[in-house]
Length: 367
Image (cartoon, rainbow, N blue to C red; front, side, top):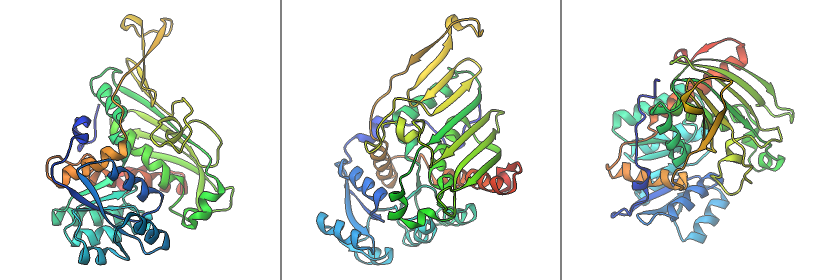
């Protein structure tokens, strides 16, 4: 099978080792996601949160409780603090603008997913970082989950044979309060395709290979928002596999990564799976890591089929991601999710959005 060109094997255990030199990180945007990054930093002995960039009152209050400087802008940050790296957890529409400020100052950055609202904007940041030699990581944190690395190892080893199909279910119900707290979530470009599906697309690219074409449909939000709330897509991979994805943030259901992976305790786990990868010699479901094969290596639907639940290490992918960011800053590791990987995922998402509008098959390379 064809795997992403920037993918590589990495030993996750090394990301939790003690870092001898303290890496000072700043977080821009200390909302829900920014605070999760701060919590991850607190769990790492060799990494320290040195400042917060947030002009809002909640940012100042958070910084005051933590006895940290709170700056109104990244320019103020670089004038007064000079961090070793910046985590951008601001709204997506600000990623490129603020990312370019970090690049201008030669500061390594970890940008929350998606990299940008469009691939053309995202390309500007990727190109600027490459030209300046500045580290640019994209926050597709699920790649740092040990169970995903185990799944990738199983697929790469050929344990399920050639990947032929993958199905992803991303169904959940976001409460009205989620949108009231942040009205930007109601607008175009902030629907579940951009905000949620980008995670799943990145995962299946990492596990199953590059996407060649997509064909998709979506329906308008039943709550009257500008964006969609139901979508589905058929993806054709460069290696010949076919993928299907269904997505909604207005369906009450147990089948989504958030509700099945146990990555974040705020989501009550359901014990279900949400990703199914089918191969010529077996199939794998995630996140339960169940490998299905016929007995004695036979491939016959009249032969009993059974599952083996695979084992893997357990650790917090967000903590692993920050630890990896610190190691990349120290030049002791290569980026697992560099800017180009984030850009390619944005292109697939953009192709899905374009297909939802025109109803046609869209080639990712045409984006």
